[in-house]
Image (cartoon, rainbow, N blue to C red):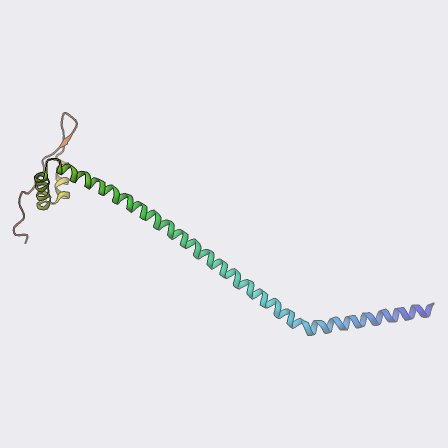
Length: 148
């Protein structure tokens, strides 16, 4: 039986030696290929992360720009609509006394700077007994002949 133990022990040692050499040989032969595969996979993941980051940032910027553009358009549209309605009401009020009244108002507005005239008017504004406001407004009734 001792001989069998010696044979088994020497076979076990030989198997361990062969396995160790095979492992070492496998690492030496396959190691560079495995390292290259790992490096390639890591580079691919890095490119993917960069692409996702850039895509996310670009999408965020586009969404932000779309929101700003939509808000600006909405605000401008509303302001234009309000100004248009006010102008329409003014024109309608000027036309209530007939086309001659509208023509007269048109001439007064052409001969004067309405912003400056209204600013001067607000300085002398008075409240009437019925709650309405009036003022003394200096207006020109003819065109400036020699502007220079």
